[in-house]
Image (cartoon, rainbow, N blue to C red; front, top):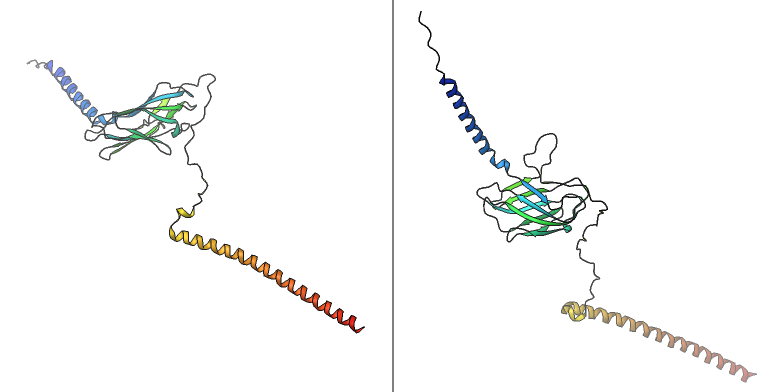
Length: 253
């Protein structure tokens, strides 16, 4: 009875090698497809401590587009930091800071595609908190908008998390120093216009009004005088009549 032929020993090794190549190719494809998800926005501080003063915050927005560059980056400030307490320290050439109601925006000439947007701001004082969340909205030169505003919670990792700065406890004796005053227009009393500053029609109307008032005043004075003279005439007439009557009575007697 013939003996069965043994299986070649190199087949398991070849099969394992093929599986390894397929796995590597799948991993490479997965990483290439997930590449844009690794882009993110982040924040760092030179003094990451509650109630620290004159703190420099560095923001980095990683580029996601190969066809357009960053044009603006808008940030919503966390509670405890007022827009008036923020000043621009460093930014790409031509970029400026514009204060908004709830934060600020930094932008200007669009950056080249693939270039990260990095800038620094100076904060008057950090609030007393364990962490600060800076919701960030990025706008590209082609109008594309990327929102990094999601907060961690529920056990699921957010796809576009907002930049978070964790703070150490405040130093002993540190106290809040208050926010910077916001510039508001001071109330002013309404200016009184001089006749020379008025238009001809307005000046004429003003002059006519003044004249009417003057005439009214003079008319009132004249009326008083005339009334006084009439009263005096009546009194004098009555007195003369009484005196003449008395004289006639005396002569009769």
